[in-house]
Length: 296
Image (cartoon, rainbow, N blue to C red):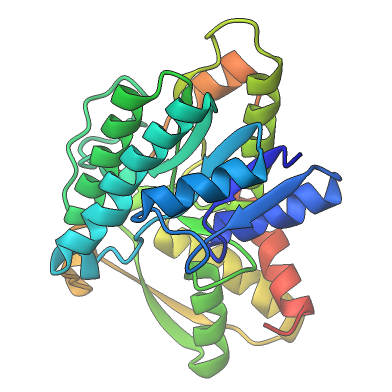
């Protein structure tokens, strides 16, 4: 029996789950396009039934934030209608669902970390599509956990850490936005949290562990702060100093507006499930060292 079944195969969280489950000898399978598609529910249901999982994890998403502004139909198909159909399948098969969401469901106002009970108000089409997906899951499937996270990076795929290392090698001087605050979160740490949530779901005797939770690394930073940490490790290992220019968001316009405050309050997941996030600097440095060891 497949204990954990992940919808999505090539994304950062899916690949992190594959690695973490293998290390812990946890039965795990991931399925993604073209083998399985959130937008094709009949075929997807057949794949899920064949896998006989105990828990389904939805790590599939349309994540091209800027492109979503001009391609909203595609974003909503994957991020809103897809989770709705997946929740309906899980309800029919009596399976709990862990659904991954984002800090972009909030408008970024203020400076306090957003709590799970705060009212969402997304600034862009990507955030709106993810919020619609959350609402579909809540309204369709009682047996669910929605896990909101932010600023995801990993040794896999394309992400901010990899981009900064590439620019460090190519330029020696980099400009990075310094007025957007949040917390960079390793996909490997997210995978660990998902495994812990799964354990609670499998062992629970009531509905205490269901609902919406925030999970990010501990602490806060601007994108420029994260870049500074990356460049510090890079300089220590190569002897090459990278000049970092801290710039406002207005100097780096994008089609989609970004929230200035992406802080998420993680006290609920710690108080309820005992999951304690690691400090963001620790996870960032671990990833940078791994990427440099691997020659990425």
